[in-house]
Length: 110
Image (cartoon, rainbow, N blue to C red; front, top):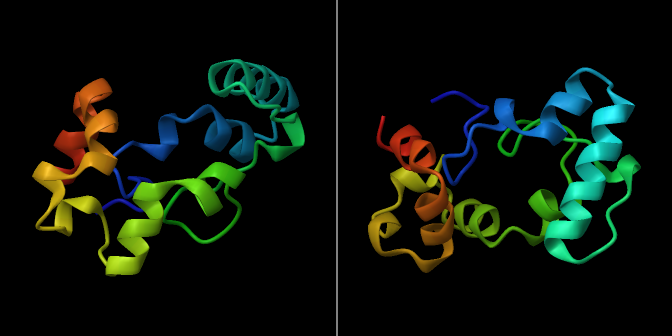
């Protein structure tokens, strides 16, 4: 499976944090930090917008690295993605992602 498919099935290559990091795009970092700050009601600084992908070696945003319950669970279980977990279809952690992004679930079923 492509290393840019996150544990939850989201495509990291489509994430603004990943795109900003790979292109060293400070304008996109600022835009992303502002949007994510508003959406999450916390202050996120542009310098915190650095990510090389959820499952790839390298930089990650603070949320993806330390706070994402899906990533933490998958790493603890030792699965490549949630698609390898027998509990995926009934998992409350991943349900919101799949409810809002059908592509993520399709990515895991491939």
